[in-house]
Amino acid sequence: MTKNQRTILLAVLGVIAVLVIAVVAIGVWAATSLFDNQSMDESAAARTLDEVRSQFAGAQPVVDLRPDGAVLLRRPPETKPAPLKTLHVLRWNVQDEEMTRVDVPFSLLRMTDSPFEVSLEPDATGLRVSTSLHVDDIERYGPALLVDDRLPDGGRVLVWSD
Image (cartoon, rainbow, N blue to C red; front, side, top):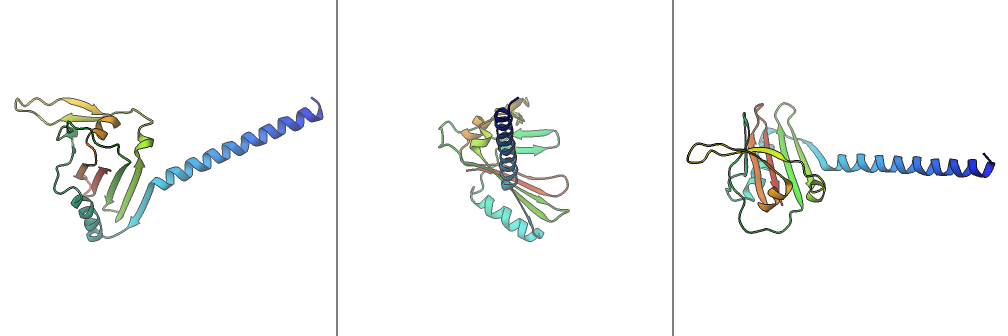
């Protein structure tokens, strides 16, 4: 191998190493920018959750979390709403007295077609059917309160889209 070839090889390896480091750094930054943790007491957490709930004027959540799995409480509207921008999650952790907020862009969610497993609320015959929701299905609800539930540990979780 000549000196020029060695120099070119080292330059190419250096550029690849810099690109790998940049991609990893951008990935870490993107992942950490989705999460926001704040320490707060229970009354502040309740106010924060109530503020979000008030945006939906008493509407029933789309999904109910139950011990035997998630249950779909209502069907999507027939009209197609405008595309959604963000999926928001608020989780109140009782033990740590910490509110975690996660804001995930729908453009990121659209990259995967992984389903969310849910059951349908029993109908008049008592039949309960298991199904899955995809990102497209969630988008059919438009801006909506998706989950408003109390967790087994006493915490709360709120999921909504806009």
